[in-house]
Length: 119
Image (cartoon, rainbow, N blue to C red; front, side):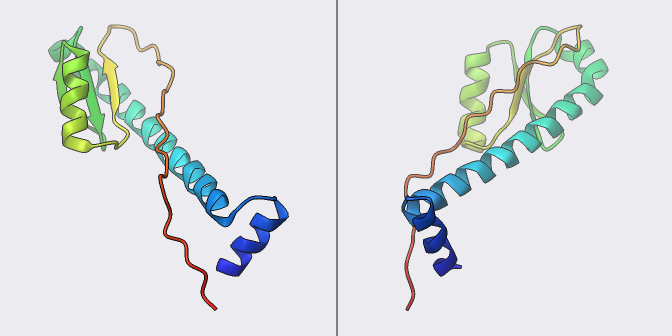
């Protein structure tokens, strides 16, 4: 696989590290997008209950469950970041309307790779 990575990188006039970074970044983005779609679907399934209990609040949905809520979005974000790190979590205000917000996915950036060539 290392040899193939080096050949593809050379053909694209880039380094194997850059090619690997790009591939991992694209993969993580796809995973995050799929997770957010699933979390949005979970929110929609819970909507009736959420409007009776948390109307006007922001909720955090992770793995199909509401894991936290708060009227203060900044405070909620801070707690979610502390609890889950950079994991994609749906944060959404509970409103009467089921209008889907635009998905904003922050893409993780790979800082470095452990890349070795074996002979």
